Amino acid sequence: MPYSKPWHSYQAQLDKLRERGLNITEDDKALDYLARIGYYRLSGYWYSFRQQQEVEGKKVKLDNFITGASFEQAVQLYVFDKNLRLLAMDALERIEIAFRVELAHLLGEQDMFAYLKPELFHDKFAKILKPHTGLTEHHNWLTKQAGLIKRSKEKFIEHNKKKHGLPLPIWIACEVWDFGTLSFLYGGMKEADQDRIARKFGLSNGRVLASWLRSLNYLRNLCAHHSRLWNRNVVEKPKLPPAPELPWVAPFIEYDRLRSRPFLLFCITKHLMDHINPNSTWWNRLTDLMANDLPDMSMLGLDLNSMGVCEDWLELFTTHE
Image (cartoon, rainbow, N blue to C red; front, side, top):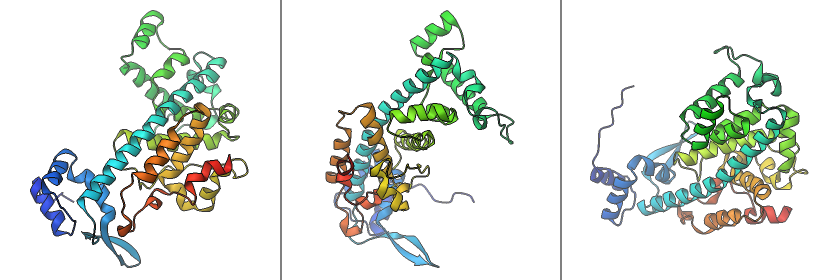
């Protein structure tokens, strides 16, 4: 279907929002935000302010806004979400670096070029061909890593390529891996090796940790592309260990809906950070932001529940320590 919506000036965009019932008190500021942030990006935040009705058993969003909804609330929510993403990225960077070291150290002990050796990975990853490509997941991973090495401008990569040639030892090659590359490789490791790393992070099952890394890679991509996070429906739902092994997961096991919201990913991040940097204040900064900086939208029926917080969420970890 051809795209039929016309171009609108910032003033016309503002007029449309006002016609639909969004409260706008300072036109100059609102026009400035539309010019700097954009109508489409901000629309992800006022989307929740729109009225809805049930049609054939399904809730459908209408164009008009709930009474009391304002442009200022949407901007406040946007700023809150931006700060949420920045905090998430702060922790995810440390997790990414820590896991690069873990994978490179364990696999490097087996072979300095371990990432080239199919026999060091499980069969589904290294031997079974994908029917639509005729390649293994290992082939795909190697192609991705080769591209990262080729594009890298790091001096130590250029130095080692010039002095020693390719391939690079895994403890050097790992420095070009992004979160997706390392989570993909961890998922391809043999279960015994996965479990060895998982135990360092308070888990017995490496497949659970593999799903955590995939979910955190999804979170990292949202943050890196400045996508809306606060009430996101998480596509890559993480697996969870039994509650007796890790008591803080109990609310998320009991209420499956919570597993598809961002707060669980923050809890997973907190758990990993406790093993990487036990003295970090990251969790305190995150909970302070969530408790104090989310704009008051109670009159619109919106609150932290949209993020998937569980009951007594501020005491979730202190209760089970």
